[in-house]
Length: 280
Image (cartoon, rainbow, N blue to C red):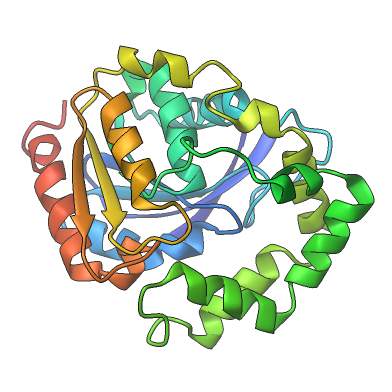
């Protein structure tokens, strides 16, 4: 596995990559990074895929510009631009939470670049909370992030995201969560992103109204006990995305790829099989 950087449309993107074969792009959730996908990248490489886990603009080791027009249009153009720069015609997108709406935007705006979609507890179907809006206020937003970076607060947030948290709340996971919202660059980038919430919302951008245009095979994966995005949103996504298949993983919360590794990988392996047998 190796780290790579490229400047795409004027912004520096970072990703980790391993393997050869049909391309699989993995997108993380809010306050996450490509590190969330490291075990999956290794596993996909062993299955004969070229796996690339990308740090979204404003996250991880990608650039964190304060004045970027953060939004679904920019993010989707960056992913399409990355594929072009790497000579990848089409890729499977596997996306978690916030990354799900970025993947959906890419599928709608650059449909020829998407071979298949796997959306895990995807964002895009909920109403924004007041905290999301307040988070865009320059001073207050950064203060909220500063307070939220306390290890005890990070641990509490992560604990709520798992059905059975104790085996997964490692010191490394808590530190990654803390680091994602710590430091001036991170806080200012996240505040800038929140300030442009309307541009990152599927409904407000008009992209949700276009979901009926999708013609890409789509697998929805949801944890039965997801307390971040409840199962009600799974039903809504399943109804609005044409031909989508919804699979619910029991005894699992918001992170099926971490909390239910074996069933998640089994689902992924089966869903990717047609791509592996027919890479074109």
